[in-house]
Length: 303
Image 1 (cartoon, helix red, strand yellow):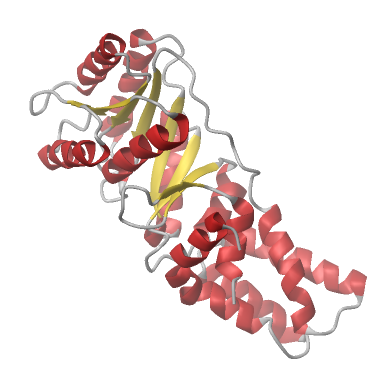
Image 2 (cartoon, helix red, strand yellow; image 1 turned 90 degrees about the horizontal axis):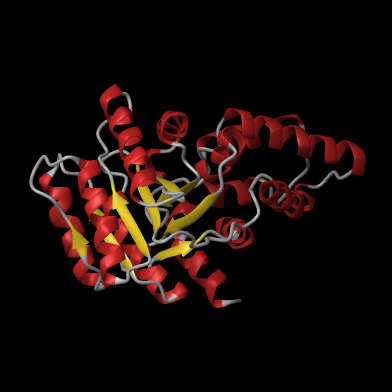
């Protein structure tokens, strides 16, 4: 077992135990009969895979059974793995371009967005030898600025912040200017995360995007939506709103090491056609990992 697969397997332990372990058991023995498909579909929906993806998976597996003549449940396990993997977009290479590269982190409060900013900065330092800088653009919540400063200290990354209730766009502009002056090549902006149904939040995010494009040509190069895996299908409603208004380019799924069911990763692909770029598998600075579809599926279905 590779180190990365081992990390996924350990990090997904609780997620696997919640539902996907039951899914493996459900197809682990016995004959295929009329109840098989209802049980399989119901378990997938409980796993937050979503109704469209669950129905598509079950129909594909039924077609496989009809075509192959398989009659035993344990013969379905390898095919289930293959079908789950086919639902996911191939790994995306996270590139740095621009002077500096500007990354907007968006998502609702409580999704782990601010924490993920610090973890992403650490990952960029470690894997890309980058010189990141954090921008505290969630100026409406004092705790967000303080939390980002704590994570900046942990990752040994400078944080640019403004006064309370300062204009978020102005903070981002100052951060880009500071990055150019200090030789930093990445700016990670932590944005406001009030409820996604509030019109003014989406307008504010669009304004921050416009400021980014003025501060640095081609910016923002990445708009990463942070979703809390524990919220399951509720997170999908958030994702649709942010994709429409914020120009999301990729997803970061957090808290997969907790009691999350994990199936929303498949729903993201099925319903939004957006790549999952990173997953959060713990609370430590180094616990943000690039998403690996093969290791993810293996970690979910590991016995």
